[in-house]
Image 1: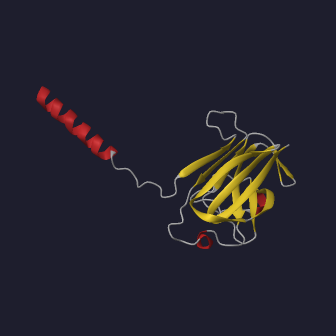
Image 2 (image 1 turned 135 degrees about the vertical axis):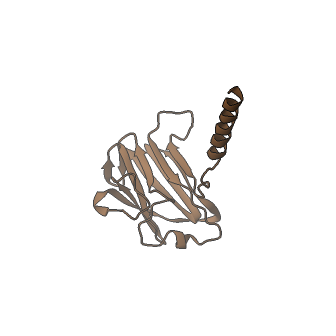
Length: 178
């Protein structure tokens, strides 16, 4: 009786262990977070962006971010931006809250869109009726390409700039405290 119990217990443990090691493949565009202030120790954030980081892998940026079309500003789910304070975005006051962040790439400028929809996959369900604010920002060309889509905040007088870079493209998106 005792031996059959031990054999049963070992069989169950081996089965659980074998099953628990069947992980899904890792995401090729992993999630990342950019926040302001940028210090990891500063828990009193004003802005946070959660996005997936696609990589060029020898592809042209224009093939991944078609000019003149709404893009999710990353991979997988639409990029999510949380404002913990009210901000001025262009000429629009945006209240604290969580939004989707879309862009429309162009040669000379990108249109950056804050949209009230959340939990959206890609830009497939994008609805411009839910746009809270739009802002055109100029494109700067980088000498050295950035392989993986990258975002970082920079402190500026009375706010922050969200820098977005990928390939040879760089934009700086201003957020001003209201």
